[in-house]
Amino acid sequence: MSTPATEISATGLVKTFKTGKLETRVLKGVDFSARHGELTMVMGPSGSGKSTLVAALSGLLRPDSGQVTAMGQPLWNLSPGKIDKFRLDHCGFIFQGFNLFAALTALQQVTTVLKYQGHDVKTAREKAVQALTEVGLSHRLNQRPAELSGGEKQRVAIARAIAKQPQLLFADEPTSALDGENGQVVIRLLQRAAKDHGAAVICVTHDPRLEDYADRVVHIEDGLITDTPDAHAASAQPASVGA
Image 1: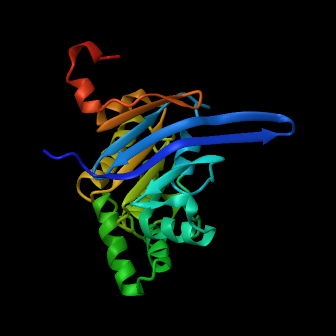
Image 2: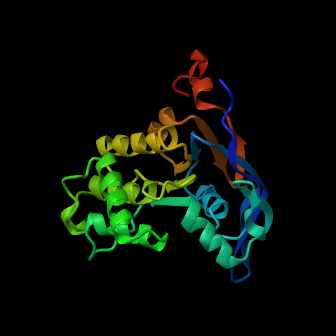
């Protein structure tokens, strides 16, 4: 079997935050890559730099130095407007807090972003219904967030992301607000986004229970990548079980 193509890579990412005279270097020269059709898990304790890494990879936060190459182009050489357009066209985002609009139904949450992409009303609705059906919410199209459970809200967020058919899908602690059962549903949907839709899925988490679902696991601590094993290769070795 051939190795999937690298969809996004980073070299030498450095990011420092300043609070008054205090400087905190959150990323300390990070190299990273994620591949087409795979779920890459970025794992580390709180404050390790994993969310900052994903923000730099996705064009949300400019690093102090280093470069991100996404789909063959150097992301941080683009103008701010072109970076925004790149995110709209090629990236999907799933956040811990769901980021849903309180006044919109599940269907409207998804159709809104598709209209921003330039789809007409009919096409946007068709794509939205298809995405919501894929995540098991065909019976909840007209419910607003207040009428949905936590797991259902996160599935709406996933539908909104995959409806765009993104090449890059970023998930930042997508299961932390969910119970174990709903967390497993969400992580399996992320797997499906990689396997069935061919996206490079990058999931940030500190939950070790999710590690078994990943194709690759990247451990980050104190702003540095500590190792980047392939999860499947590691799980095939008895000595690593339960590590």
